Image (cartoon, rainbow, N blue to C red; front, side, top):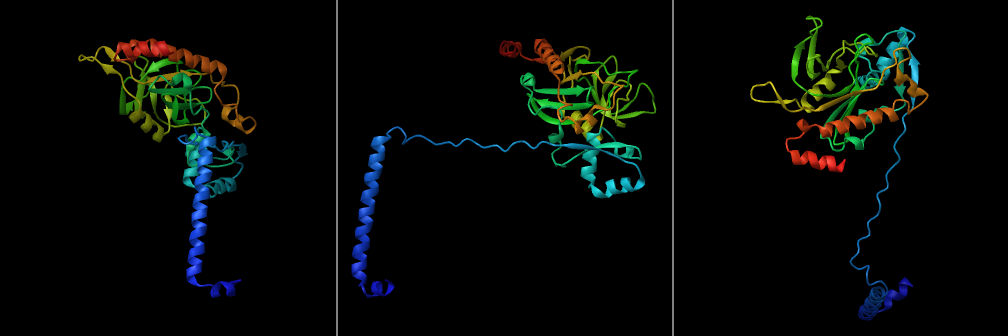
Length: 313
């Protein structure tokens, strides 16, 4: 076949090629005309394919016991600094608490995004009308920050011990200080303090996390979390004399009941991955807090804005 083609003159080849091209173009034009006649409404339509989302990875946990010095060394060398920090945060502990006899909850996968371990939902519709909200769950010893119902950040806490519990309720961010001296003990320095109960002197701040509720009513945080809330949440707005609240600060919603008699609840994740999720009764409490927020004029500078939210909700 190749030999025959070499013997055909270039002129003949050119004529044949042009004939085939014209015939093909004529056929394509005819096909397009037929398609227009059959489907005249589809010419201006856009075919949008639905985005296919990969299923969310389900994290599984195991509970490991530190029984000797060799296991401590193995833990320190087997994980990077960032990975160890995440594991300690999941266990509501400071790194200095690592010792023989400690039980550690270990996830099967260590992600860079700590929000993947959040016991709080990524979206919470009951908060979608609230610009910023701080949730503090005493039951699971964790906080969550929401921006119009979308999770921004979560982390571990240590709330009030049994004899001095943190009061539940809808509170508001009042004043803050990068360094505050404790009213309980003048030797205690409270970095990145953000008060949400003015007369009671209760707020969030950085302090030791022992893995259980241990404070004198305040809510203890890791340093990086206390710094974040310090910058992220809003203080109250006072009148010129500094005596009257004209606008509330960011709401701090404290809820849930910690069971001091049972083992720490996050260790149940090894058997039940849903055990630390918000319960129906806790959601109902948060819904009531949200309704109370919308009814308070001090949460809105414009009365008409408040009316709109009340109508929508």
